Length: 208
Image 1: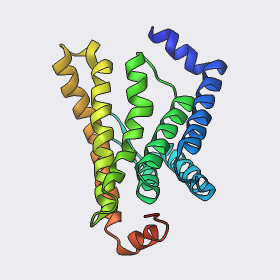
Image 2: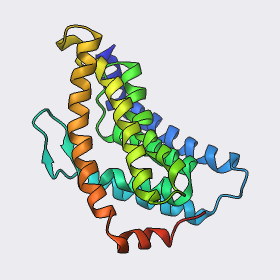
Image 3: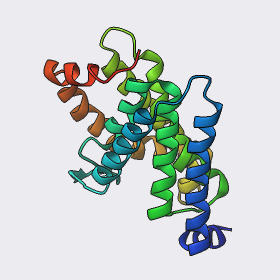
Image 4: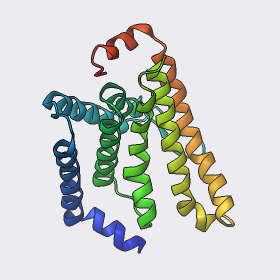
């Protein structure tokens, strides 16, 4: 199963399928939105996804347990939700996850595929439920990365199951692996989010 999935998503057919799913998702959101979709929102969303993807290819440092800390790549997915709402934020995360699958597929199980790519990154957008609270951007970011951490850790059970003694051991290993790099990037990001000028800049583009 692992070899079949890996070969499929690494093939031209698999890449085309992923692209079709991405386009279909964006069209579906646009046509099912009760409000007329502002084309500028779609353009800004695409730009933020592109920035996040470029930053995701860069590594500030690697953690001892594994996992790379990127220069604030998760922030730009979270920003989509903060600026335009949870629905748009989840869409951005799912699209980002599918782009990651398109460019760097690593698939060992169907459940791991769904959890690691669309769901874990899509969870980054859920933090937008707190976008209108005091210190909304920081709360949005923290809830978003918590969602990604939880889903990635559940997915990690599948990855670590063969090298550990049972599900519980796999979960503990997965939690340790995911916590180190997500928490490290989260800490650095929250530090810059305390800069008042940065918050004011993002606030200008927020749609209430």
